[in-house]
Length: 608
DNA sequence: CGGCCGTACTG
DNA sequence: CAGTAC
DNA sequence: GCCG
Image 1 (cartoon, rainbow, N blue to C red):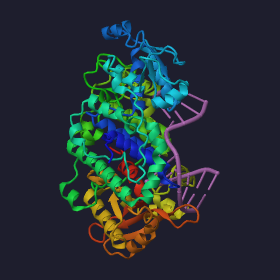
Image 2 (image 1 turned 90 degrees about the vertical axis):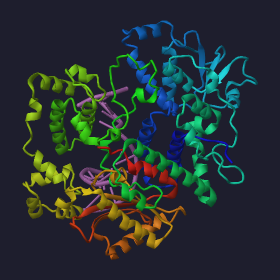
Image 3 (image 1 turned 135 degrees about the vertical axis):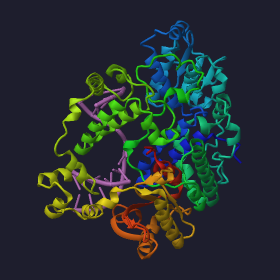
């Protein structure tokens, strides 16, 4: 069934979009938001794959455009401007199924490239629309569209801009949908979600090929459609065992394939041995989720998304440069490599001082800004020579530009030289699990300056007590094999309860990091409901287990009010043998049909 | 000037 | 409810 | 902190 095929990108998108429709699950939203980041990561990385989400494409071109227009000094821009791309063309944008923001962008793209708009669609020869021709006729209230009018997807516009040419509109022609939607045929089987393996042919994917496929059916092209039909899909998965299995399996294997491919490509250091040892489908396992702060640093620069030969990005000076493109993890030696190639160490060192201060002060967003700026500067292949030069980089604003100027001129920054006396102590305190900025300040205010002071004078909560008790241990990262061993204990124990349950170690372990801050295991179950009840049993059995010692519970997340469906566990554990250092262990339960999103989420973007 | 992920737990 | 962690 |  399903002659329909979708490119990996589409699938991921689809998968992620499915989750929000998913029931009650409290984590759904969280999953989504984070997954979204990861998605963009995955998508953009695969340099060869053209961007499919038209919205994103539009954004990117909008960016590019914005930056091109003010300065048309280069010859290219000049010529561009002369014979504007869409000069003399009149189009009509049908806003149904298009978000306001996106519509605005499309209009801007269109008009700033010489096109004119006629929203009455009376005179327009081109109709930009995300809705089917039949629906379009409804909207326009006509029996028949006038002769010679083309109905095309709006992303034709951005595609044209990307290739700086008027592409044949028929490649983006809107065809009447096969009214089955992506949901389910009457026999209850899935029609559209056949992921199939046409991966091979897309290996060399020319934009055109993919594009044609994309436009050819409702799933790939009409994302809005997708969203609306998602609930039906998931619902059906619950009832149709067969469907749920096939679709999930294919989805999972696709994801894992992508991830594996990525690892191959990037020579991520997943130590060889283990990967095969764990038999779960995905296992490259991982551990933590060190915070969103280390999030992806905007890898979506135009260069990656558009084809290299695109003249659009070439030779045009862009006021705000994003970053160099590609994944950090693609950097052969990861973090070290970046540090070694840091051409702006003098600057980033100073900014790091300021970062530390903001961290200690609990200035969350400022920390975020510094991190972004530092990372961008580190990866900026060129030595920055002035604040104003740095200012052009996305993420670096006036304040930092000033600092950079000062650093360049004087070699130092006065701002970075005054460090509050309290800083070190506040940072120390906040290393205690359960102690944030507020508690840290209060302890400080009570006269505490050391952890012993806290133990003696303050009245820590349960979690904070544990945090104090295991402070030194929890500060340390563990080698990934230890994380793997701990995770494996959890997995085995979980299987001993229900052999069909599926566990995966996520986080930095899964990302292949050599050192992991904690162990993060997600548990799911193909029956779509056992995951809700398995956790208490799992914890109980782990507590009896001698292969992994659960030392303390930070929290046995029992799903909000009443319900006994625990969704997560956070605790402190240690392996019986070995150094006996205590480690943080998190276990999450995830509905089977959200695994795709969960994978994206918990594998995360914590790259550094 | 407001937003910067959003949610669910503890106390 | 604020604070914290993820 | 930065961005819009």
